Image 1 (cartoon, rainbow, N blue to C red):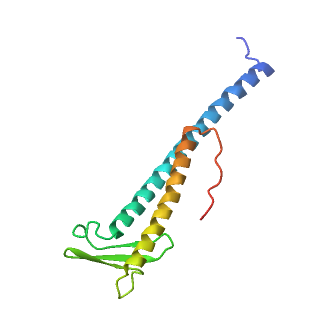
Image 2 (image 1 turned 90 degrees about the vertical axis):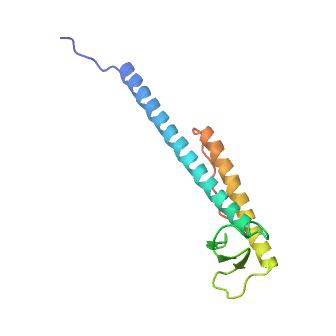
Image 3 (image 1 turned 120 degrees about the horizontal axis):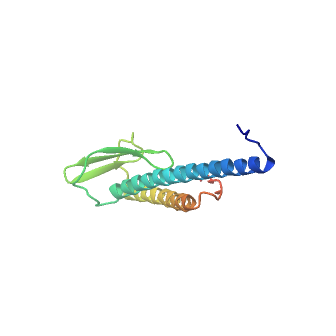
Length: 141
């Protein structure tokens, strides 16, 4: 029976094969995590846009139910549906409904946050297409 010999050449080939397999596996994991992050950001963006739509004056006043949510800065809000009208409370514990200027400022803050999330989502979708490249760190704010 012939004995198998480990030569430097064969060991280099084995290391190259194992290294390539591990690199492809790492690339696949990065691709998957970046796609998952992009999907999470898409859902967050969609929820913010739906909140902004529900806060807009005259938008779907006669449809839906009461709901509680938070502004991007963490301020709680409450919307109460009353027949064909609605009342918006900012903050949620307030006894007096918010005026139009406060609601408009809240919608603008929500749309700014949705825009930031949209840019992050695009960044992660592009990064998923090229998983072998690194991506810059997300800056807060």
